[in-house]
Length: 385
Image (cartoon, rainbow, N blue to C red; front, side):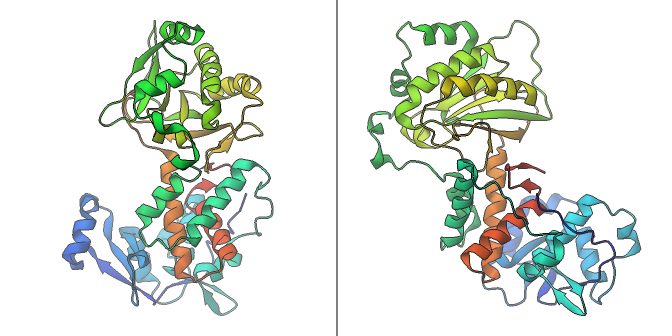
């Protein structure tokens, strides 16, 4: 994993290419866009490039960083109040602010920021990114795809990264899977088979709704089941569409014997063509790993589709895992926050930043991967640092 140098005693200065605009001096359009932040007592305003032509050159400014920006108008070391609370998180924040261009760092009488500062911020270049695994290769291809897209809107770019490796409808025979009842027939449900008996014995079914585009099942519990956790762990089971019925039946058998508290599957053609079509949820990581150990041999030999920006659990990419911050209550028929969505949002912002640096494709990919580490994402596993 990439390591950041200890920057406490480095000399910095504010980048004169940026201006700091206080919240009260923003125009109405900007104020409207930042309406949710206006209630945050730590929000100060925005950093904006003086020669900005697009919105990607704008960065949010919070009070502590704004104060530091004013303090470092003249080059120098970090102020004493900043050093007093200096830790690994602050170190990463300073590296990120230099990489974003807000501050510059001095090395041998010259100041650097952005892509030019990368070699100055890290102890050594990343040599082994684990590219041999198909899921990691897929994630890097997704980043290259994002770099090559002429997409100015970061929200749109994040959506395209999130959907990467979705199968186009015209490559499949999925045109009949237009309703969740079609999906249930496709999966072999309703035939009084072992699959039906397992589902009826162990699980409560929840049909799709206006705000929930999945067919989901929650565990039938005899005792107390705590719905408040610090995090939720999930296994992605990602076969190609033609192998999904067989994989689903085998997976339900394993999940019924596991500690999974819920699982879900896409409700229609669109849901089954996406890579993250089948997801099982666990309260503890050890429970997830125990289930993965059982799923691996059972699903071996089936062709994988694979979910980018997830951590591998097998050699093929059929099984991978992720972790989401839990809401106050886990409900089987409500959409929740997604770590993978957070990752793709951060990726989109990092790709947009790389374009302001006018880098080549491979330089941009390297820049984005290193920037993601500063954003708290380990790009060798796509998990939180």
